[in-house]
Image 1 (tube, helix red, strand yellow):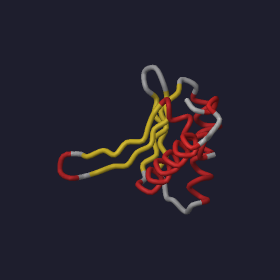
Image 2 (cartoon, helix red, strand yellow):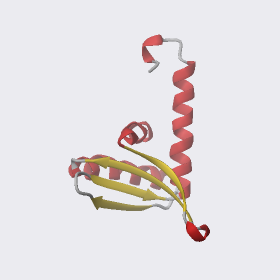
Image 3 (cartoon, rainbow, N blue to C red):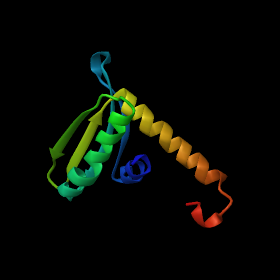
Length: 102
């Protein structure tokens, strides 16, 4: 689930946002034209990861003019995904099989 979500972040990303007045937000976002893919593939994986690791998340689905967006607001979930992505990148970089390196 984790690797799938990280791969799917190519149509989105994880962001640390700072607002006026000192408020901050940690957000991971997945965007897609196909809302069913978000509902059937992304949201269930977010829920499984958050339940498995005891992470409280707020999941919201937004409709834009050309795409849909799933937003997860949670510092712990953001930290989990960002750290997992670093570990995956490190494993790929350490791999001795050149075809795997992108």
